[in-house]
Structures are given as structure tokens and as C-alpha cells.
Length: 85
Image: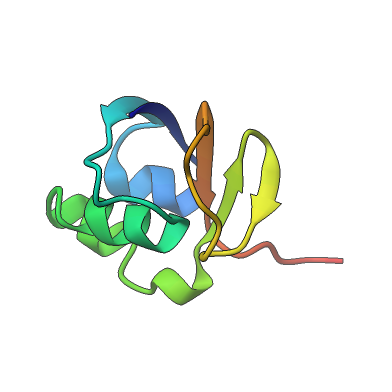
């Protein structure tokens, strides 16, 4: 499955790009699987996604939990926790 990934804030800064299109292996079923897969792509991904429990994810511009399936996703946004009020 091919998907467009969009990175925000310090996730983008640490990975070194704002977005990319990648082909996901069949083993990537959930958001959690995606994050673990990305961590294996290189040191910059490992640094950006080191603490996956704080990473927020949106599929097709809707916030989702880490157990959400990625099937049918056209765009997946990955960003740090939001702050402020």
C-alpha cells in the first residue's frame, strides 16, 4: 500500500523532510505498526519517533489512536503532542 506521510513540528525537523510517499509492507496494519516500521528506516526516524507513546497521528486529517488500522489511508500526519490552551 502506498501512502503519503506528512511530518510536523520537531518530528519534521528530526527526520529532515516535511513529507514523503512510501510503500508500506503488508506487516504494517495499525498506526503502531507504522511507527515501528518508520523507526527502522534510519537514525533520523529513530530519533524523531523514539517515544512513540507521545506521537500523535492523523489519518486522512482525522486524529486516531495507535491501534487504528491504516488500510485505506491516503495521507498520514505524524506530529508531537500539542501544547497550549
